[in-house]
Length: 192
Image (cartoon, rainbow, N blue to C red; front, side, top):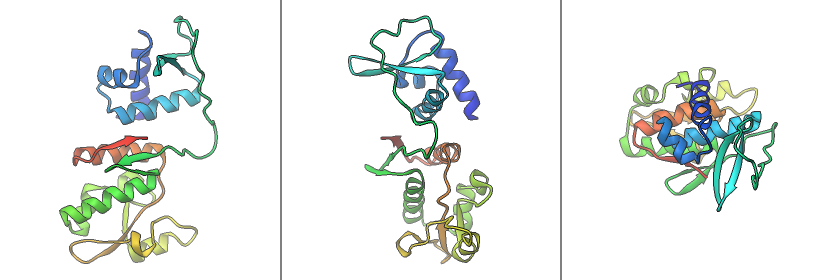
C-alpha cells in the first residue's frame, strides 16, 4: 500500500473524531508502525495535530470542529534528517542500522544463499542501489560516498560464501517497504 493511500485512510477515520495511533491502526488495518510514520508525515504537513489527554496522545485533523482546548501542538522539524529510532530485538537503531540488524539475523538464523537473500529482500525496495550487494560491487557503487555498511564487523557472508554489504541509504518510504517484508518473515520492528 502506498503512503498516499495510508494517509487517506487515516484522514477518513480522523474525520469521525480524534483517535490514538493504536485505534487508527485497528480501525484501518494498517500496521501500527506504519500508522506512526504516516501520522508523523501528516504532522509535518500540518494536516493533523496531537491532543494530549491524561498522558495519552490523540490525533485529530487541524480543520476539525472538535475543540482544541488543552491540546499540545508538537513542534516537528520540517527540514533535515528523520532521526526516528526503531526497536528490533530490544535494541534501538536508526533506520539503516535496523535494516542491517534484521538482515544480519536473517542471514545467521536461516543461512540462505546470496540469491535467496536477494529474493527475500528485493532490489526494488532501493532500486538505485539494491539492499545487498557483493562486497566488490558495493565498493564500486560507494566511490562517490559510502552507500553500504563496509566495516569488517558489518559485512556478512551468505551460506554459499559470498561476502556482501547492506545498503545504508534509507528513506522513510524505503524503510516502510522493508518493514512490510520483515514483518512477513515474522520480525517485529517498533518505533521508539
